[in-house]
Amino acid sequence: MDGILIINKPKGFTSHDVVAKLRGILRTKKIGHTGTLDPDATGVLPVCVGKATRLCEVLADHDKCYRARIRLGISTDTEDLSGTVLSEISSEEVKRRVAEEDFRKAVEALTGDLMQIPPMYSAIKIGGKKLYEYARAGVEIEREARPVTVYSVEILEWNCPEAELLISCSKGTYIRSFCRDLGDSLGVGGALAALERTKVDRFSLEDALTLEEVEACRDNGFTFDHGFVPLEEVFRDLPKVCTTPEEGDKRLRNGNKLLQEHFSPVLTKEEVTGYISVCDSDGTFLGLYRMDPETGELSPFKMFL
Image (cartoon, rainbow, N blue to C red; front, side):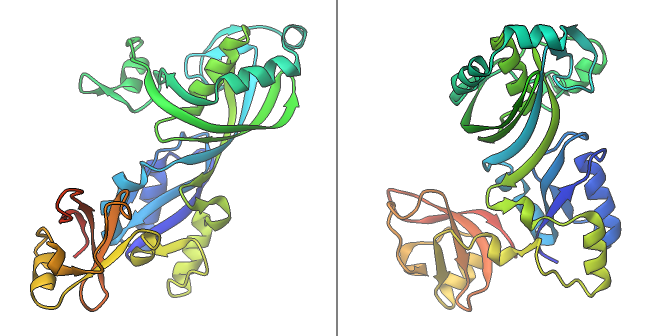
């Protein structure tokens, strides 16, 4: 198996737990996840299998979509309801202070390009240690705000002091921190109450398999009706070229640069905004390349020999 498994991560599992479970189910060690989900979160977790493990960092860069429930009136050290409560006010007080229109305006103000301070309970490394390691030791580290983009927020339900939101955002956006900032902007505090990731790039919850379903597919001869994307299909939307026989194939298999005479069709810099899918002269996908906009040459990014 070389490709992407779309897993519906269950609550209570870390992303590492899912990978460990799949190693046993699929009887392979070459597995890696993309885009960590908190243990309490559920939803879409793309898992790379076989040669596709080289894609983990690429897939982690994609935009994501979440269904999130926020609880107003409470602040915690983890920025969700699993943490230690730092401050709390009653539901009646929240209802008195926050009207639905106020909430909608606060959500609108947190949509677009933002500078977001990541939570202490995160895997970001500072000084060679992950932030959550400092947090567990009771040490608060000053964090720099990072640029993120919240493309859209739809309010699915307003039932003060809680609301359910559908959030579309860029990589690196922490929904826990979004809830923190939203609550703080309303002057009452806020924390994430529940989280489900509904989409990563083009992989949606409707595509996802439970761990039990993966096990059933294995028992059925590794037959997948959905939820598994073969390696060559992952890049179907990218510009594609094939190398010329002999010299082009040789350079591709050695992971060398490709000059324009070594592949076809010729691509212009206007056609290329990112990666290029490169196949050999027989049409077998072997690598991701990038184009030099000045020379039109292709340089290898990831090879899948």
